[in-house]
Length: 327
Image 1: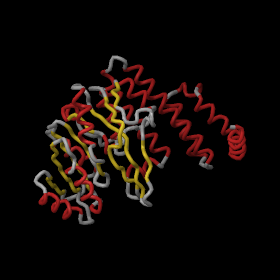
Image 2: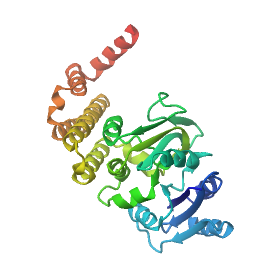
Image 3: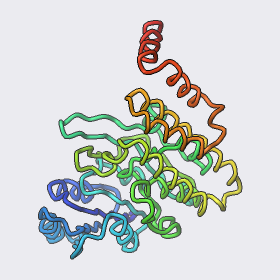
Image 4: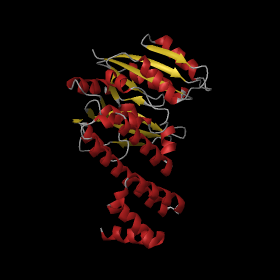
């Protein structure tokens, strides 16, 4: 059977840890190993992790004496991995049944594939759930393979990969190395771009994992801040363009695609900030959009931003309402 190493970084997620680990050890059709790394949690996560390791010989446990941060913890897990495939699974998330064998089958069918990802379910504190489908229903119950260029186009300047669904060929992971300390909030986006440069990317049109969205969720709380989120995505793209992206035959085209789409995202966020009476944030986002891609001024997102400012907040709301009635 295909072997899969699953690293579970944990910091203050002790209450979720057992469900996370059991979602891995209950996977069928693959041979799994689990490494729990507790980053000096103050909530008793270490005791729970140690107990889980005693109960199942497939589970190993490590505990940091002092907090080292998530990037160092992720990279420690990458160094440990040695199986065919690798997955980094946060302790507050968990896998759907059959997730690993579905990913392993797709990767096994394409020997040069770097990683595969799929749909996820976003689970909120109030119990509500929302399906996160990067491609909507167009690839539901289907698989697909993307070249680097097609994957970049599909991203449209944002991270489309639900992290707990990303199963990576371990040799590909080792070839691109670990996560960058300079990208604490967009390291995953940079990683997917880097991996796409060393081999095709697979997509599994099924629910592969449950991604918890809660008050302590780092990525959820950070992405709500418009300007820092765009700035980190910009840094992730530039990191990729300076490393794996620069070695692609169509490097110039990739650069234009990535920067144009990100600038469009920034302009759209500038419009949203303006509507919410955040004039200074809107101005900074607009300036950043022009810095990222000077030709943004000739695109539809920039025209929408211009119209927002031209008619003002109240005028735009009235216009939007009229358009809605018209439809």
